[in-house]
Image (cartoon, rainbow, N blue to C red; front, side, top):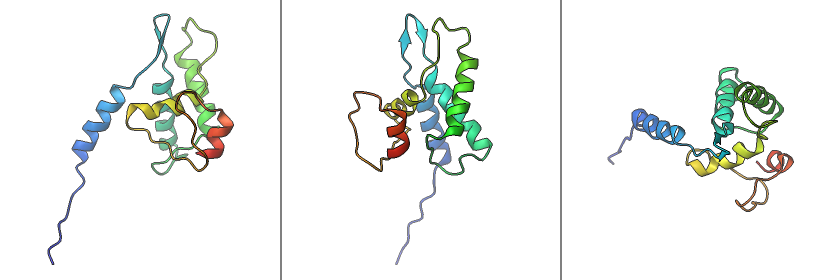
Length: 124
């Protein structure tokens, strides 16, 4: 019996995800780019470095929400808009960028609108 051993191609994976991440779609409102998706990614990387997340699964929890809000205030301090983008928007809409996949434990809802924070916490 011959066995075929396949090796994971880290370089190919790195290239794929680098391209996906650098090409994430960001909304523009009145000429200003909304930075919510990149800020969420930075918050997740910080969570990995601080061992809040120890595997390839991220949940919407108090730590990520607080850290995301802190970073949003920092990165949007010169924004023309008051307030920051709620974490539910990038958490939900990153899925359309091809590298973020949501797994649901409850009912799925339409991609046409962003679910509530409680729905994301209960069903993801």
